[in-house]
Each structure stands twice: as structure tokens, then as C-alpha cells.
Image 1 (cartoon, rainbow, N blue to C red):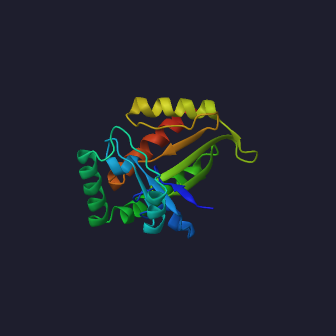
Image 2 (image 1 turned 90 degrees about the vertical axis):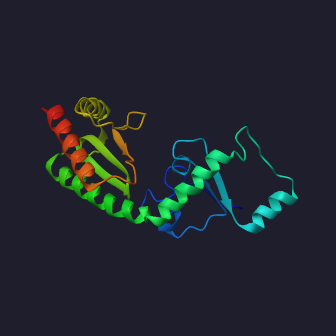
Image 3 (image 1 turned 90 degrees about the horizontal axis):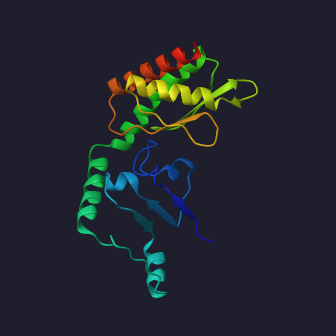
Length: 195
């Protein structure tokens, strides 16, 4: 059985390592990439070993789309990888994520409505709850906080399905000042919404 890891959101440094699966010592047979790789252009990639690639080729397993081998997104993808490695952006995401987590952990100490802070690097989940002991989700509160954040100029996202969880994935190039501003705005929105 082959192991495929989808790193569309987690790959290329977001969680503090080039590939998230390495945090857990997983060595997949395939890694899929997109989003960060294309820097906004339609680009994805499948990484595998040369042995598996040869087996796919020998078995005539090919998949082509309209954008297959498109030189512009390919050039952008190569430049993205070059910059991530050159500027050590995975390390930056780890450090920035520690700052972001510390800010939300401190906020969690001040507000019972924050039930959990989880994630790695610059991919985090902030869970709002009605009661911290029961962990009952507070989706209405999350929606109201998200709306107030937007009023303040902070774009946030909550996970659909009534969970009351904010999904945070700021750019891996975010500055400390931008993190601090975002934390301040989020806390203001939460405080004002709680009344």
C-alpha cells in the first residue's frame, strides 16, 4: 500500500518545516502540493521517488490537463521554491507561529470563550466554545467575532459546519508587527462581541 500525503495547505513551510509530514516522521510515497507553490497561479505538483515515477511511466499512467507543462506557472513555482529555501521561510513560519500561538495562549487565559488553540507554525485553529468544560462549540459567537474582525479590517475564516473554529493561515512572510496587530484586532473583536 502506498502512502499519499496532501500538503496543499501545509507544504512549503507553513507549519515550520518544508513538509508538514516530517514533524511526525512520516515518509510518504507521494506528496501533493498546490496553493503556495503557484503563488496565486494554477499550479500543483506530485512528488514521488524515481522508482515510483518509473513504474507509473511503465504502466502508462499519465494525466494531462489544459495547464500541463505550462511554462509560466512552472517558472513561478521554481521561483517560489527558490525564495522559500533562500530566505528560510519555513524557519520564519515556525518563529512567527510561536509568536502567534503565544498571543492566543495569553488571550485564552483571559477569555473562557477560547476553548482551544492548536496547530503548527502559521496554520492554527482557534476554537470558541460556550463552555470550556463541556467544549460545546460556539458557532454564533465565532460568526459574530468574524464579522467584527472584518469591520476592524482583519479578514478571518471560520470552519464551516457549526464548529466555532477559526482557521488561521497568514502569509509565511508576515511580520511581527502584523502578527501583533492581528492579535490586537482579534482580541478587540472578541471582547466587544462578548460585551
